[in-house]
Length: 161
Image (cartoon, rainbow, N blue to C red):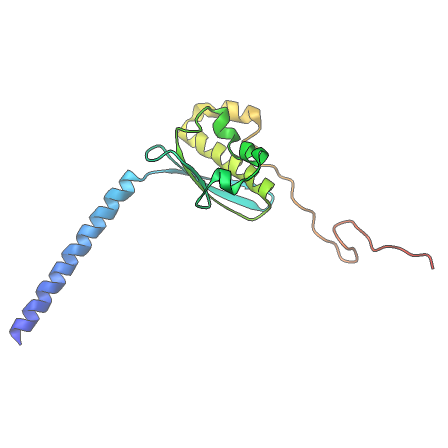
């Protein structure tokens, strides 16, 4: 019986040692994978933008290349507008998670988020991005539906007879 308890202790001691190593490895990995994060918004679209200075230089939106996610050239230009303005399109690895709204709204939310991240990265960019209008959060939202109406302002059709 003593032998089995000794084996259990040694096995658990090894497991504890392995857990300690795993924790150290994850801490090292976290140090290597540092990023800057910001949130961009437009209407109901919210984009969480992460920017890495190290690693592969890629631009992913919801784990897809941004040219696949935004199929039209106009949406691609809107989404990458802040990076184009700062001439740093291929300097960073950008990963974005965007939810809500339509494609155009999502593209503008992505641009807003990238602009905020670039300012955290380099505060000197603020003046140029502000002048381009990329830092201003567009406050326009959809007006709520009112009772007795079909939409926000659309009244039911009126008939005289």
